[in-house]
Length: 211
Image (cartoon, rainbow, N blue to C red; front, side, top):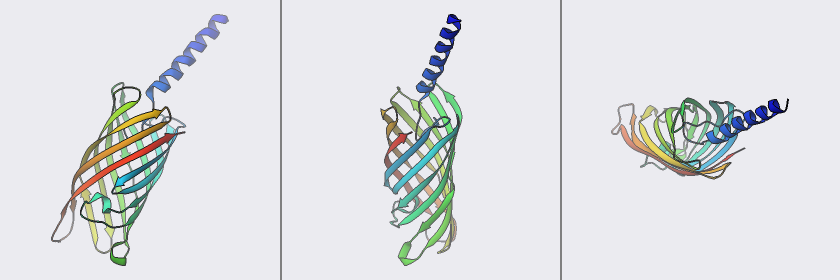
């Protein structure tokens, strides 16, 4: 009986140690884990955002994001105030000791307010997030994003950004991380306009807390 208790204690310790070793991430291929929650605030260009996410399974995070923008969807030569309300989904596709990969989908509503008018639209970004753990505290990330968006008025247009980027995430504590992200690329817009291609940039620093 004593041996059984010892073996059970060792097994529980190994499982718990494995769960701790896997860790968590706000912005790469490592999800939060079942029952893990996270709040994540970011600021920079093109705005300020707040995320709330929850790990509904070992490989799936669901949540929401609110964004206040002063640059229209990252386009560098426009300064327009706007709001976004998004549903967030991140699902892990691959997990290895030195590499993980997740698919992200963040659809939602967007509102912009140029020249005392209101532009209504929708955004439906899809992207891949890769993580490269360097050590238990430091993680690098690589991203490929297609953050498509459409406006329904003033005028009605479809926008197709193609963005590549990366980032750094550092754990200050087991439940607290600082993040830095950079991604950029062209945005191709529909319609017969004098300009249909725009340079797009996202440069954001943040703090994430797992609970």
